[in-house]
Image (tube, rainbow, N blue to C red; front, side, top):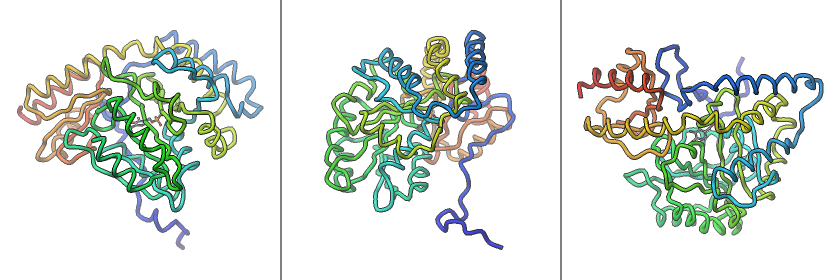
Length: 368
Ligand SMILES: *Cc1c(COP(=O)(O)O)cnc(C)c1O
């Protein structure tokens, strides 16, 4: 018997960064520092309170959580006038961005990005029957504003997704480039209207001093959305909470396509407890940024090719046989990620002990 699988899904593998039981997990850009005991207590208490009401469906519109997230973004960046109506959340920012494609993509429409970039974007397009288009980044992995604007005007995408800082390169967009993209996408959409421009800031909290957030441009651009997540800086990947800030009309479109009660009462409770303890959860972000910069400097001293990173990982090369290096590290208990451009590998920034293990293993494997 054959199942009536969609022909376009035949032979496809599910997303699968390896989940292996090894001592040093430096492959999926998690925060290596577990939530501290004060936060564990607060989250446990919040779950206990929510559990008493689990016979009821959760609050569909979760305005209290959205208000908390608006206040957090307002305190973290120079965002002005954000309130609950400007915020949206789901089970990870992957689901948030799927909502964007469900609302604004679809058959006959195009979504685009600039490669190398996040491997999940084409999957949102596939899952919503949206055509996927990629334009190249420059050789230093930046987005060339003139080339990007010309390509956007040619392709007329419904949605443009740009990660900043970008995964897997760590490259952030200068505010001037984001501004150019936001101006161009005002009139580049499929029907002569706007394209939705999503700036995916999953790694925003790790950016170097002086690197801006696109959140500051929201007030001027009703077609701009900034996606964030609790999975990285918040040390909360297991909780599955991502969110997005945009104009209320854009957020209202996402409310149409979400499944009923998509954010459980438990998730809402643990997310609110986390936002209330944002400082404690992000206590080690400064340390991670320093260890990231030290990792870049160390790799350069050894003659590896790296670009500056505004995220909690570093892409490095060039390796004649990157798979052999990846495997050599794994044999020494260090799991990193074989992703991005050929000849490059990506390492997430762990604790100082984990980074020592990485450096020792890489030295042994490459002899450099
Ligand atoms: C990790 C990551 C995300 C976040 O995914 P979640 O679903 O929120 O865990 C989003 N975008 C990029 C580019 C990422 O690397």
